[in-house]
Length: 198
Image (cartoon, rainbow, N blue to C red; front, side):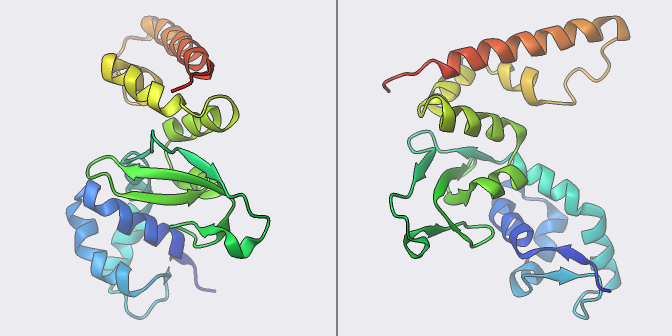
């Protein structure tokens, strides 16, 4: 049985992310991705080297793609007022109608797309999922507040989300690093959950 290497939603996500990624090998296979929404390991249009490249790099490309998007501060999400699925907009990645619309923007050029909550969870970074939860449940303006905070304190995202931060930190300091990360997250979460009018 054929194994799917790239689903249509993953393919679309890579196509939309590629302008910000500018990865040579991804750029090289982009015409193939545009022509073939689903790519299976048995697809006869795949050369052996391209098949291997996709198998080797797929996860890495998806992870890198997750970091080039952010929630749109002026309109992070909207709930469609209609109860009729026919009136709902479609997710830019899976193309399913979604009632809960998350508006995300490419960090490099401001290109905006609408994504459903399931695709946010599947494709977007831990940072965006964290902000999505706070924005939806507690404070519509949390993304704008987070943008202001990180502009003033650019080390905050590194402390919270960069798994590779301080890779050579001696073992005796690891506990302190964990303490700083947890303390920062608690502080930032408290700040973002505080409702603001603007």
